[in-house]
Length: 145
Ligand SMILES: [Zn+2]
Image 1 (cartoon, rainbow, N blue to C red):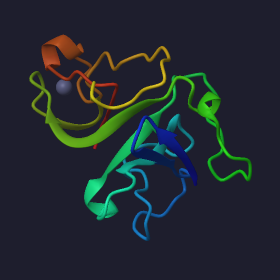
Image 2: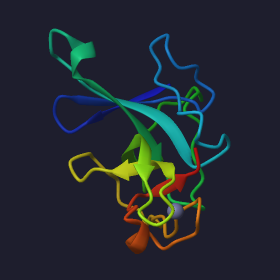
Image 3: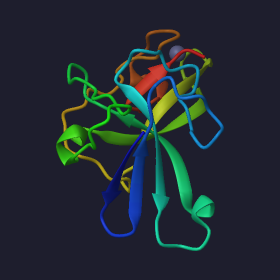
Image 4: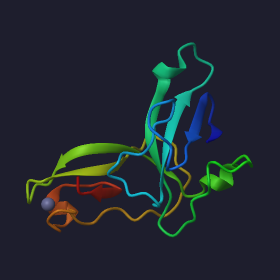
């Protein structure tokens, strides 16, 4: 696990993809493929009395083609290891307006920190192939359940 201070008063923790959910680690939702550009992350306040009440489990997304550094390596990460990272929310049960099916999504949030990078957003419903404009499914990535 790596921990990097973000701005003033926040810590970002990045865990290995194989981290077991629970036991203090968020883990990845099981609908996210292993060996991908996504790692489990937790953003939390520091220097507050109840740190668990000020934590948010997220997914750290690297742009496709950018090597994902190993969070379990001994050397401490620097900001360079986060180059291109976008923090996103894992969300389940979005409904496609074309086929009516429900899909899971990695959903960006402009209020979360990011480290630049050129991300390619989802373009089609993973169930029926409709364009996201017709499907009304706008997200970084979409997954069949
Ligand atoms: Zn669809």
